[in-house]
Length: 179
Image (cartoon, rainbow, N blue to C red; front, side):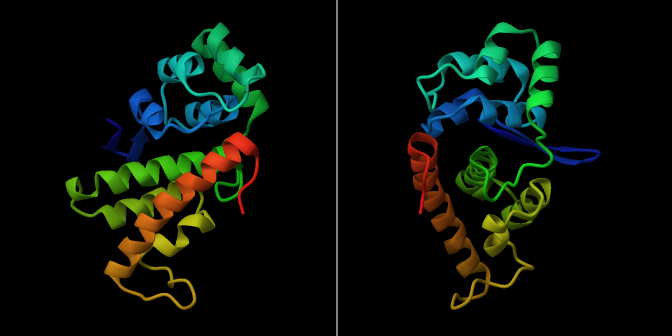
């Protein structure tokens, strides 16, 4: 089960291999590298997923091979030279969208176990650099035009986002496009 932990610096979001495998979405080396570099997954999880996950391409992926064939320090160095995980657009880049969706959907599925899941989503919004894809799920942001305001409407939008974004990611990661 994925963990969301409080640390002195704030919350950390850690995702385990089981959560990623259960999502049953194709992944690639960029997704694994972004998760590793942002601290969302550990190196052992990244290495395990490089061998066991449903990869988005049958072609060998340089970053997947990097994770499979290198020790942690070398793999982190290579990944950080290839990807600037802090500068990814988490609203449009498929790897960024994957992590925003995965963390958001994990909190969604566990929302009854948190004292304030909407506050937690505000932290996710901040953690990923305020992606537009989450703005309709944030209490202090206006609702989309024509949509109701209030907590019940926001929670309904969150549920739709989790379902719709998962379907879109399936198409993006396996076929390269989503309307």
